[in-house]
Length: 449
Image (tube, rainbow, N blue to C red; front, top):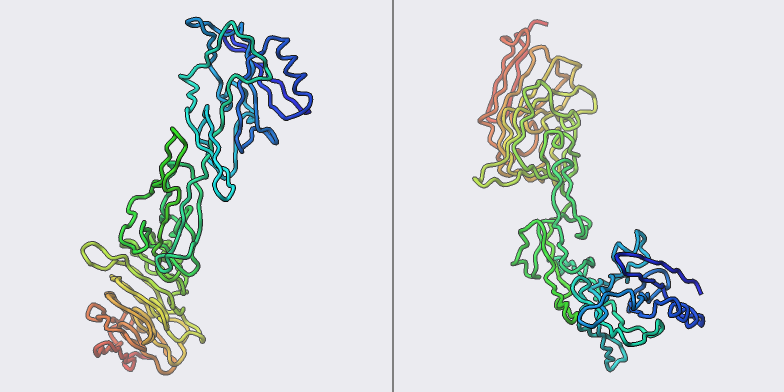
């Protein structure tokens, strides 16, 4: 038999603690304890758990003569198996995976149901601070016969169950917690723009919106965390409502939040984004990424609704045209394609520079919002103001299209009244610009070649 003997001395009390493994040699070992004066035994039964690997019972043995006397009784203050006085190791820490430890109890009553399943009820919880063991000083005690057994009481861990409001009967995830634990709701990280789901399940192709305690979605959880509603009666170790159901509301798509200019400029052309606040890109001549100027936007960019109903603002955005044979559409977004969504945003003081450079190929379209906008895009509650600067030294190879909002396609009712197109450069006075509604025509005939 493998045994470990640990002697602890404190005040005038001597105690021997035994990690007990059943063996034919136990009687001889107890006889040795009796001989050495450790004849009073207190047994701790892990009751389905264990202290160390394979050890389900530990026994403390006291010397009767070393115990203090009070009112004619020998008094012993018992030591919690997990008390740090037993040492820094975790040998005496009781554990039972999947269960929560409640406490130590003097009485355990076993019951068996009709199916043969065994369960326990408990009474008389032992308080190690205030309760004391009382012994008859005139009685003979034997180490092999415990004067008291304390039982570890366990309950299955409480659970959160997660369901979707879209399908409130399909379990998404289970999460086990201790009694009294709180569940932290998902939250957005302002630095990354990503959502931290914590212990909530991630649903592919969906983004978390809110959590509810009912499948109808009427009782929303508005706090940052929610405490499990289950309860434990420690007097008899009974629980009520150990499972709490959480119903998740989601929106289609995997979305990110935008809080900063850097996050705005790091958008992908096919991602989904919610603009959380007004952003100012500053007064730099060129501060907008060239991948947007000539790329095709098929994602979603939606401004968070303000309390006053006004759209979120993106201010002082500036860019210039790209030259090259492969580019056909140039704007704040080169193209706004099928399925793209831009909603609830006011673009203020946007500047587009069409500069002197390599000749642009025939058929290129320009617009302050986009060179080309698909009729299958969704653009709602969007306003734009700003200036298109056309350098008098520009060279166009063949046909071109310039619009205040877009050069080609459907502007989806976006107002162009706050957009102007002006000539700049050494011969600006000789460049004739005619604006008819949303369309811009250029006349270079007065410019000497």
